[in-house]
Image (cartoon, rainbow, N blue to C red; front, side):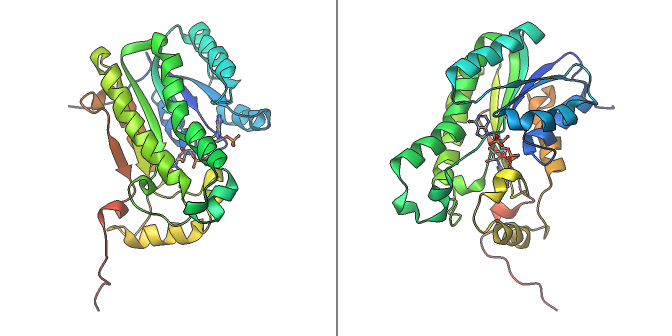
Length: 264
Ligand code: NAP
C-alpha cells in the first residue's frame, strides 16, 4: 500500500513566519508541497517583503498583518480566513517572544511586566487564536504550536520563556479536551534548538545548540526539515489518534540525562 499525504482539499493558516529559517516556514513548506491552500499572518510590516518572496512560488497563498496579541487584528485576520477559505482545517501557531531583560538576568528577578508579555505572546495567543478560529474550524481540524523542552527542565537563561512554554503545553491539553468532541486535535511540537531569528535572542544559544547535539543519542541536532515533516504528519489525517500531546523532534536529546563518553 502506498501512503501519500494529499492536502489539496485542505486550508491552513500559519501564524509566525519571519523568514526561510522560521520553523513556521518549515511546516508551511510541507503543507504547500502537499497541495494545501495556505494563508500567513505576520506581526509587523517589516516582515511583509520577506513573506511575499517566500510565497511567490505558491499561487493562491495570501498574507495578512496581525499582531497576535491584538484582538482587532485577530478579528480581521479570521475574517480574511472566512473570505478566502470559508472554513479552516489547519492552524499553525509558531510565535514566541520574551523581553530581552527577562532572559539576560536571573530568573528570580523577572519583572512582572516581562512575565506578562512573555506569557501573553508565547502562550495566551494560542488560546485566543483557537477561539477566533473555532467557528471556522472543520470537524477533524488540527492545531499545532511549537514548544521547547525548557518547559520541563531548566535551561539556563531561558528563564520566563520556560514558564511560557509550560503554559503553552498545558493550554494545548485544555484546548484538546474542549475541542475534542468535534474531532478537532491540538498538539504541540517540541523542537530541539534551531538557528532562527528568535533563537538569536537566547543568551548562549551557540552553547545550547552544541550541548543538545552532544546529548542526542544520534550525536546531532534535529533539523527544521524534520520539524516540517513531523508537523505535516501531525496536521494530516495520518495522526487522527493523537491529541493534547507534546511531541519531541530533538534527535532524542531530551531522553538523556548523562551520556557516557564513547570508549576507544
Ligand atoms: P522566528 O523565525 O523568529 O519566528 C517567531 C515568530 O514569532 C516571528 O515571526 C515573530 O515576528 C513572531 N511573533 C513574535 N511576537 C508576535 C506577535 N505578538 N504577534 C505575531 N507574531 C509574533 O523563530 P522560530 O525559532 O521559528 O520560532 C517559532 C516558534 O518555535 C516559537 O514558538 C519558538 O519558541 C519555537 N521554538 C523554537 C526553537 C528554536 O531553537 N528556534 C526551538 C523550540 C521551539 P517578529 O519577527 O515580527 O517578532
